[in-house]
Image 1 (cartoon, rainbow, N blue to C red):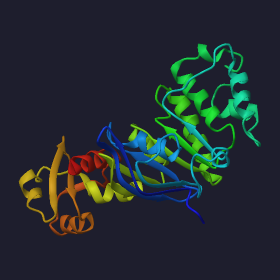
Image 2 (image 1 turned 30 degrees about the horizontal axis):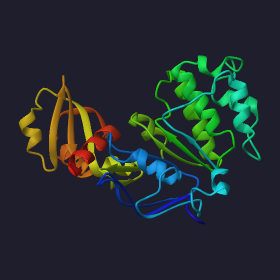
Image 3 (image 1 turned 180 degrees about the horizontal axis):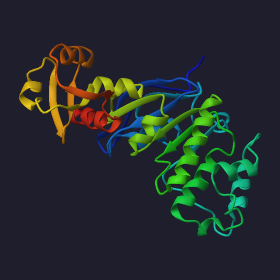
Image 4 (image 1 turned 45 degrees about the horizontal axis):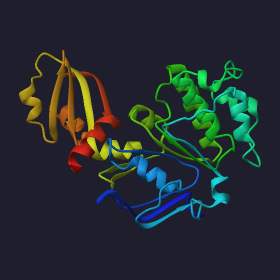
Length: 296
């Protein structure tokens, strides 16, 4: 099957500086991909090129197997960008209906109001909505045409907790129906919970690509934590093979290691006084910070 998105050595130069630098990647259909990177990394530029809003200086970009600027492709995608512009003197329901009319097979108005959490606001003027409500309206407009590929640029900024929960439940349901979703977010716990794949770019270059679990395991390693007995001290733990760092919180100790399987065997063999043992990977936030630090 033709990939949903295909970049081949895509480069974008602004005023002599490469915002995106020789970026190649392929995104298969039916997956949720989080595109991450620090401010100025090239995420928004990459999205704008995939959407056909900007053209690469060199290289090629295909969306659903064709040029992103083609009308037949635009009809099959949706985008929720950071800036949401509303039309004066149009109510929420009227604004959504206006966008529905751009598509051959739009989703029903009531469904769009429900998944965006705007049922109670449908008769309000769109310009009177709060920032978070306007983000939700932007989402309703992005999915009005029941797109095959959906782009979300910092989608939950300004949303309250309940709105975020409804939003991510909707995204998971769309993914379950085979939609391809590409998102950027600074809320890495959201990316960790919803994304099938994480792509990290820095200075316009690809620096990591894998599942959230792979990214975390390869970058931060895994950790063992347990409640230590009185005989356990930092020095003895630091001498154990494979221990890269030791952290204490009261009598709770966390050991960082690239090989937790071997370390747990050693802890048992050495009869270390411990209870309530847990083994887990570091967080995606930790992995992200480590990747950016390594790349700089």
